[in-house]
Length: 531
Image (tube, rainbow, N blue to C red; front, top):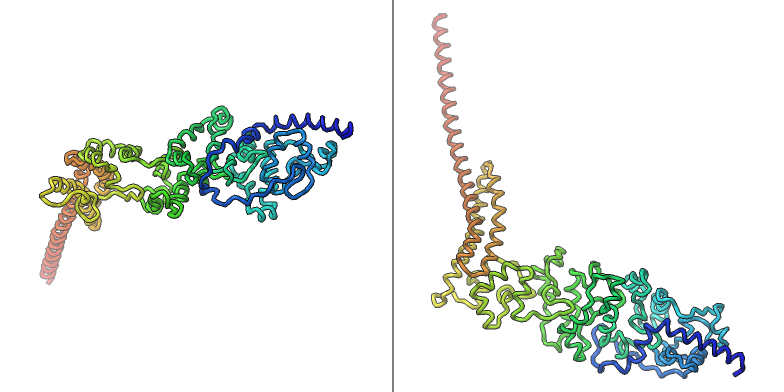
C-alpha cells in the first residue's frame, strides 16, 4: 500500500467512524438480534410464505453476484459494524451492493473516485428520503425485481399510510428501516427479523410504547397497547411461541397503516368484523384452537350486525366492543352481564335484582346470552316470553302445574300483549273512524308514545317481577285504551250525525211537501174566485 493510498484509507476511516452515528438509531438494535431471538415456531398468518432458499454468503470483497465491491473491502478492513452486519444481509445475498443504496463506484479502491459525487455518491440518505430509496426496488416501477421476488408495491402502500404522513411532518417518523433494520436485514420469515410475527409486537412498541416519542406525533394516543396485548388471549399464546395468533400487523396492516378514524382502516368500526373474520372465520386456520368459526356469519345476521354493517350505526357493537381490542379476551360467565351492560345499563340493573341472577351464577350460565345468544342476537319480541317453540323460557320451564313459574310467565306475557294487542285494536278503531271521514288525528298521534312504553316494558321484563312490568306497561296501556275509545266515540258520533241527517232530511222534505200543497191550495182558490 503506497503512502497516498494509506492516507486515503485513514481519511475514509474517519468518515466511516462518523457514519454509525447517523445510523445508530436503526443499526444498533439489530446487531445482537440473533442472540436475543425467541425460539422458532410456526409462522403467523401474515407471513405464511416459506423462507427463500438460503444463499451462501458471498466472499467478503464481492456481492452474491460475484461483482467486485471495494466498498465492502475497505469497510471490513476498518472493521465497520455496518459492513460486518451487511455480510449476512438478505440484500447482499441477492446481489445488492453498498453502492446501490449509497451511490458511488464500488469498483474503485480510490476513495476519491469511489465516493465522488460525479459517480453518484450520496452517502447516508436522509430519513425522509429512505422510503423512496427503498421503493426504487420495492415499489411498482421495478417490474423485473417485482416479478423475480414476488413483492408487492410496498412504496405505494406506505405512501398512503399514517406513518408516511407523520414522516412528512417530522423526520423522526417511522419508515422502512425503523421496522426492518438497516444493514442486517433478514427475511420476514426469519425469526431474527424485527418484523417476524414473533418479534413484531416489540418492534411496534419501540415507538408506540414510548410516551416521549409519541408526544411529538399524537399525544392523545395511548402507549400501553403492548402491556394490554400481553394480557390478551392473543398475547398469552404469542408469549408461548404461537406465531399464528393476531399481532399488531394482523389488524392494523403493515405498510398501509391508516388512522383508526379512517373508514378505510381495517380497525374502523364497520371494518372490524371482517378484520377479525380474516382468522376467526377460517375453519382450517382455526382448527387447532377448537373454537367455532361461525361468529362472523352469525353477527352479520344479528340486530347488531345489521345496524353496523347495513345502516352504518357506529353506536352498534362490533367484535372489540365486547371482546376488547389490544386486551382481547372472551367474556367469562361472570363478565357477560357487565359487558352487555355497557350499552344496556337498565337491563343489567334489573337483571341483577332478579331471581335468575343468583340461579344462573350458581349454574355457571352466561346471563344475557342464555336468552339472547351472543354473536347472533336477534331483535326482541314479546313472543320470547312464553312456551312457544324456540322461546327462551321453554329452555328451562314447562307449561304445566308442576312448574311454579308457569303461571307467572303467562301473566308477564299477558301484560306485554296488552300493549301490542291493545295497540292493534286501537289502530283498527281509529282506521274505521278515519274511513268514515272523522278527525281522530290527536288519538292517532298519541299512539306514537306506545312504542316507548313497549321498550320500557321489554326492559322491565328483565326484573321478572309482575308488579314492575305492570308499572312500566301501565302508561302505554292507558294510551291504547284512550285511543281505542276515541275511535269508537268517533264512529258513534258519525252514526249520530248520520241519524240526525236522516231526520233533518225527512223534516225538510215534509216541509217542502206541505209548502207545495199549500201553494196548490192557494192557486186553486184564486182560480175559483176568477171564475
